[in-house]
Length: 118
Image (cartoon, rainbow, N blue to C red):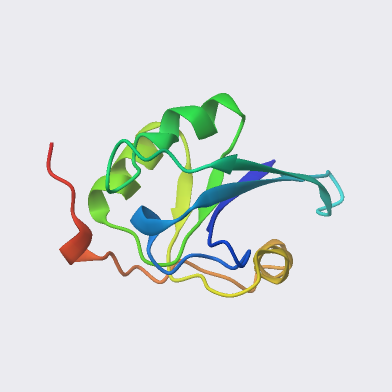
């Protein structure tokens, strides 16, 4: 399994998906442990960064742990086969461990003021 997390330069989860500077992609082992991490720069083409969905899917990402994110970006990520868990914050490694332990659920909150209309 591969989990993507939008991050800030401080390596914390970015509160606004569309403003993130990079993505960390964590490879998770069969024993639910972090095997490796890869960082890729955020695509600056689109303010909502929904164009990153293809890149992440090509790298095998199946889950995005995000803070605030608009419905358009969620739909694009879902269409690429990437499940989105909203309302995440803090240190990505701690968050991933909590998610894998079943302690993190989707907040269900979408940032309406960040909607991207094609």
